[in-house]
Image (cartoon, rainbow, N blue to C red; front, side, top):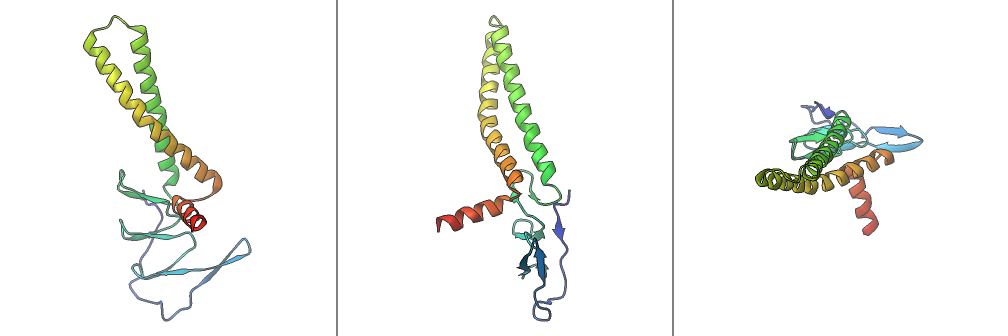
Length: 156
């Protein structure tokens, strides 16, 4: 799925045209020039150096999916996080129920189930916090890049 890639321009117009200004909620934003894509980027658009493209509302580049998470695919990424969190917690619950309900099961199956439950629990905890973080970002109307940028400017 296209994350919101802005098409490149083959002609360098940086010296010809002035930077376009966009008014959003009464605030004037000056578009920034991307030297790599040779375009004026709209507000909240960033250049992804992993994919080498400009993406609208770039949240981050996901190295697990090998894709940018942007304006057009963020809801699918969020659904993936939710689905994985629910799946891991359900599988952990099923493993726990098996261990409690069948205490006289074969030793090897109990050990295997215990190891699987431990791995699922260890994987689901950070995944849950990542899902909660993205829930917060959606509620705040921010991207991961903007959240990190705000934290950096507050510290400095």
